[in-house]
Amino acid sequence: MLNYGLSGAHWDPFAELRQLQSQMNRLFEGGARCQRQNGSAWPPVNMWMGDDSVVVTAEMPDVAQDDIDLTVRENTLIIAGKRKPVTEDEDAAWHRRERPWGEFSRSIRLPLRVDPDKVEARVSNGVLEVEMGRPDAERPRKIEVKAS
Amino acid sequence: MANEVKKTGGDVARAETEETRDMGPTFRPATDIFEKDDVVTLAIDMPGVAPDSVDVSVENRSLTVRGRIESPAPEGYRRIYAEYAPGTFERAFSLPETIDAGGIEASHKNGVLTLTLKKSEAAKPKQIKVKAA
Image 1 (spheres, each protein chain N blue to C red):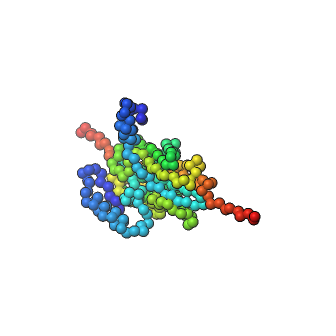
Image 2 (cartoon, one colour):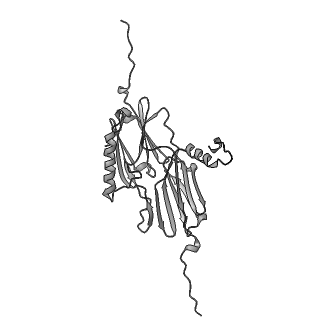
Image 3 (cartoon, chains in turn blue, orange):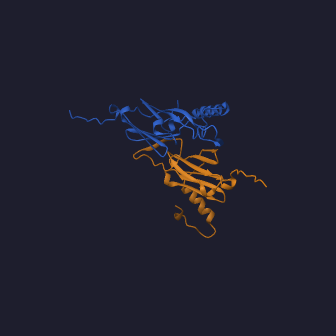
């Protein structure tokens, strides 16, 4: 599972080293299920923070809407799915094959707990956008001070 | 974009640099190329690029594809974590003589640019009939 700190204060330099190590391992494994575009987890994601909600965007070109499987639980979002190869024709002669294909799954730790009923997802030009809201009970509330 | 840059005499190279910077970083898109039955297909990953901002050009047997990534911040949100950045996808391919440069077809769907290249008639294998003398 990948954990993402909220700010620079939470940045863990060793996390990057561990990531690098796993990338190297993957590099030498050979015959990996997916070739990574840039050596990191697929799909690459960005995270955006709002007042009471969080948005995760992911670059996942060529993944059909029906092939995306989203799961939200407390403060974790799982993006899973399958990316079909551009051709399954065995007679085709490959000149270059750089695009990853196959099954993928990525677990993303969110900076807040989210309400599964407040999740909206859309896809546009191969970019997935998942908007998730904080449960009402956990919203910060103003407390009125009564005169005694 | 380029209009914002004042072009002075002999300073064209500089102006181009400014333009490049204006477009953000340039990324090399991941590409699949395969061939079947005299047709070469290229599938180029360009997530975040709208179909109308894809540019495909052929010059001197060099095929260039370019697409500007449009990824505006969701309204009312600020970015707290990033693994990909906005910019421009760009990649050039050299076309072999056997490809008919005039017969290239392009389509863009779900962030993938697909190009279909056909071999020129002259490059296709031909059967030559042997006539009886």
